[in-house]
Image (cartoon, rainbow, N blue to C red; front, top):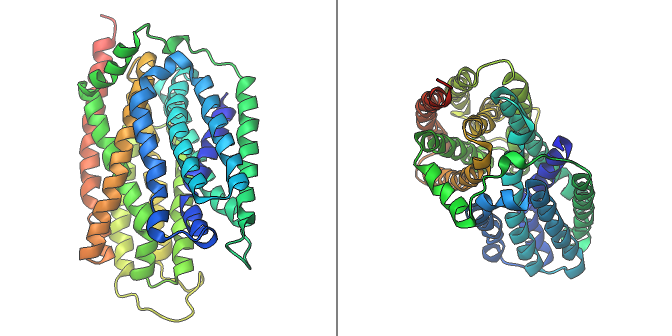
Amino acid sequence: MILAMILTYMIFAMLLNSVGTVILQSIQGFGIGKADASLLEAFKDLPIAITSFLVASFLPRLGYRRAMMLGLSLVAIACAAMPLLQAFWATKLLFTTVGVSFALVKVSVYSSIGLLTDDAKAHAALTSTVEGWFMVGILGSAWLFAAFINADAPGDPVWLDVYWVLAALCVAVVVLLATCELDERAAQDGHAAGESFADMFRLLALPLVAVFLVSAFLYVLMEQAINTWLPTFNREILHLPTTLSVQAAGIFAGSLALGRLGGGVLLRRVPWFWLLSACVVAMAVLVLLALPLAANVQAREGMTWWNAPAAAYVFPLIGLLMAPIYPAINSVVLSALPKARHAAMTGLIVVFSALGGTTGSYVTGQLFAHFDGSRAFYLLLAPMAMLLVSMALLRRAVSRREGAMAPA
């Protein structure tokens, strides 16, 4: 079951993070304008947030394993439609389907982790491992799509054949899930449908949940700010060639993958609060060390991997330190709640993560527009400080809840 969950997450990582490639190929192959192509991001993100909010609390009735199978089946059909239809509207349909299905899958995966683990440390370790493989899927996406693009004729529709591979992967994992067993009795609460939806709003009233959502918002704000604007930083501040700017930004994604897989091991041995606090402090130190390396970098001809500024390599390593934070705090709040509340809580996680990502990208973009990129990234020190405070409050809230639930 764990293997099926990881493979499911990796497939969605490849699809969700292919939007940039699909935009480029739609412009070159379908003759679509940039303004129209840019709408694909919304076709992906809005269904994730809306579906998570509306259906998360109802998924225990459908069943987490069935929900994953449903999401994969819908995506397999949408993927198969891409090479058959060869039209831009099919890409909109694809990303809408991927968004809706990912909401089903993320809620199901996170909720299933609670059913498959017995204590908080095991929960944190498995959550970090699953998220780590998600990042590996992101890295694999670029290579998979690139393998199907005709370098001599980028607009050649042969690139659409990549979706046959993705559809086949979806079908294979559906078959794997059909052979798995998952005891979901602990996820059932016996509530009526309307009451289950209201549970999501009741969770917002818990101090534990409120503090967690602030922490998650701050983390995603920082990650998305760096992820979105690092290529621009590389191009405008470090004066790297455009291609190298994008490639060098891949160091950040690779660092996130390694950090989450490593965090899955460390969280079995180190208390979450001390590990994450050390990560945040080290992040701040890295910002203060790396960004001065970007000062006064001069543009020059023939810049390659071998003679790029040190900051191009050092700053993206912040991903190693950031990586364990998001899955760990998600695990902390889910472990502190009854398993029957995990689906509703994961719905809130997805919604607030989307808000944090959108805010981080927008705010950093405004800072890039009005200041230079180095100053924009220096200002990440503010949410880092706030994250330390919110994690301390989260630790206190978890301790109080554990004390209240302990037998007298």
